[in-house]
Length: 121
Image 1 (cartoon, rainbow, N blue to C red):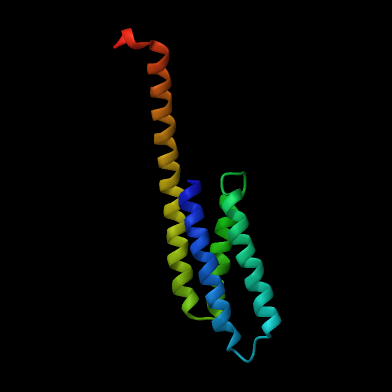
Image 2: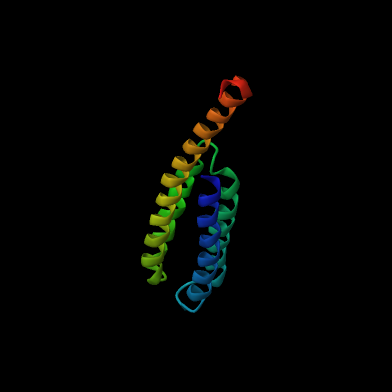
């Protein structure tokens, strides 16, 4: 799960940065505000790469997805990009857990074969 989720979060890091560049062009937004919000979101996306397997990591990832979609009120294309990344996040968590379960079952079967010895086959 960690690899899939981290890949999604790193992709979001770049999208948030590019959205900040687009938001800078809006005269109604202060540049310091834009880069403070984008900087916090970018830092969160990188920090979550290491926290995704810890308790609350996935939930923080969902909060980032909600924030990404909500940023569409300032950069309209982010409604669509945020939705795409929310689907990617769901897929990363869902299929990542399945892969982790398959790996655990395979490791158990390998451990069982190793303890049985070569004559058991």
